Image 1: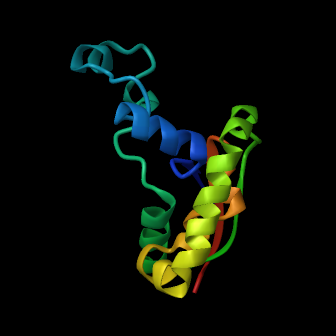
Image 2 (image 1 turned 90 degrees about the vertical axis):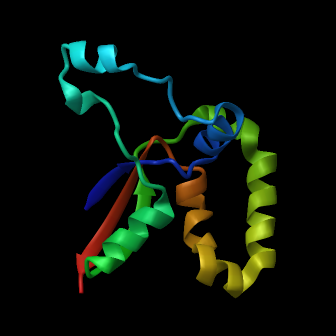
Length: 123
């Protein structure tokens, strides 16, 4: 089982669209002087599609994708969620093959919480 920050949920996508980043920027000085060490900062957080690509390249097969907790604020984005799902449907197999839209825009990913939980098995 693998836990990863869920960059694919709708709130994260909107935040990235609006700000160009997913969280406030950490300066080099803040990073070096942190009393929590360097483990508290995220250097590279992969999207669902990039995570899936890496897992499959390493010989894993995804069995289930879920999340830690519902994000109540995402309810405001439900109309956008419906639009994204409609676009996914129109893109069909071609969009799924090229971008893995069915997985990236599934309910558990798109409406999931802060943490994406991917259960996989080594082939």
